[in-house]
Amino acid sequence: MQKIADLLDRPHVVPGLDAGDKASLLAELARRAALALKRDEPAIRDALEARERLGSTGVGRGVAIPHARLHGLAQPFGLFARIEPPIDFGAIDGQPVDLVFLLLTPETGASHLPALAAISRLLRDADVARGLRVAANARDIYETLTA
Image (cartoon, rainbow, N blue to C red; front, side, top):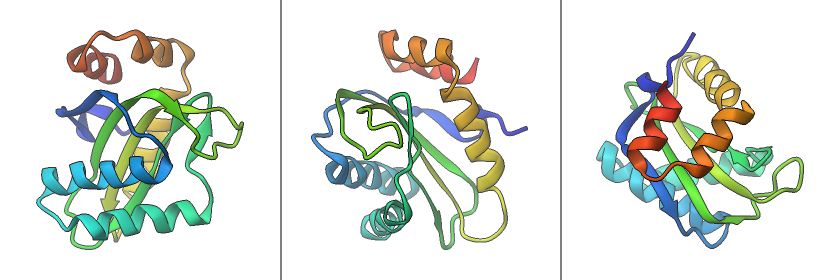
């Protein structure tokens, strides 16, 4: 079973991101991931947008898990953002999204499957989601995600 702490480092938690809309959010996530990974921002943004064209990664209950596989990435990378105010993400239930977990995984292998399952399982837990929404800061959010 994949551990969230293996996917997410504490500096990659954003407690109050004002995204505006889905396109702006994906661009901002790509920018932050590119800085953290020292990678090409347009390549990350393009990979995320290509995945979204297949169908929204808004899984419902205010949660989205945008993800993509990247060439040359050695290990999975996660970034969590609490969106304020929530945005329309085209989620399956039509609800606006305020909890977003970005997942980038290596292009080869199946590391994305257990990681996506772990993230989805965690964020679908009503108590965890509630805790993330009321957490006062990035540290509290990280502790809620990794407890």
